[in-house]
Image 1 (cartoon, rainbow, N blue to C red):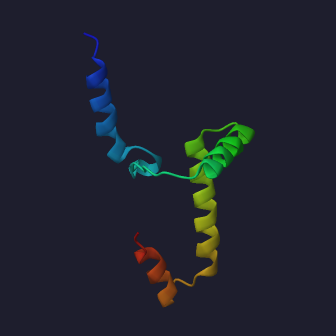
Image 2 (cartoon, one colour; image 1 turned 90 degrees about the horizontal axis):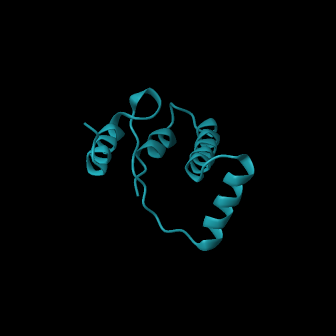
Length: 86
C-alpha cells in the first residue's frame, strides 16, 4: 500500500539524525538573512550549478578549514574554537 504524504514526511524526518556523510546526521538551520546575502547565495549556487544548501556548506567548510589551519591543537585557542556556541 502506498504511503501518505504525512507518512513519507515522518520517515524522511526520522532519517535526518543519521543522514549525511559517515552517518553523522543533518541538522536543521532556520535563519533570516538580508536580501543582498540571499541573492548572492542564489547567484553563487547557480553559477556553480549546485543548490543553495551545497553552496552554503561549501563556503562554511572552506572557512572552517582555513581557521583550523591557523590553530595549534596543543594551544588553548584550539579548545576555545571548538567550544564556541552561539
